[in-house]
Image (cartoon, rainbow, N blue to C red):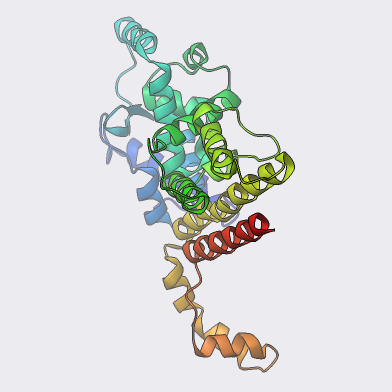
Length: 307
């Protein structure tokens, strides 16, 4: 591999090595270059660093994106005919394609990897052509969130009883966040996104509590507290995914690797209650936190209704 000074940023080291492979002929025109995930594994860097390296190579015109294939080494200079074909492809792109592509990038690499330029690269169209379909990133995120909720439609019929209905809604929202870890960073309760498919969840939750004698203040706060529990727990999902990519370790593997450190800390006698728990380990994870918190909140709703 190319030698670099230790002060060289990791992404530039990756750029330098891939540039060397291209100029040396190890990678020829049309050959696939390592994907972001392959770079993460080979160089042990974060997904954002891998994305930045590929972006730098694209800016040098050393690589280009081929839909359905991935990033490949750039071939001969495009002819006027090929540029015309690219403009034609841009006209054929739809808003749904833009949203699906953006969602795929965010699902795989997180929101930091999402940009209009990156979407255009994936679709192999000029960046400015995207603005025919979306005004900017803020509207794009709104469309992505709405599409995420639309992908998990509310059922036509709900079980009887307010508790079963609210529990079903919360579990459905949890599955949406699980499928799209970035979504929790986009959703806000104080500045809600006006995404129809997301607003439908609030409407259905309010309907579950209707007719129980609650005033509007209490009703809305109960619904918001439940939604905030789901979203607040889901905020950890993207960070966990990033940590796993950065370290190459799952949560269980990371805990196992830290076992000696934890044991030394807890046997010092300063944390007796934690030491007691360590002797009979409790399985604590985002799913167990979601489940425990959901049931306690629903117990609280039941108490409010009883009063």
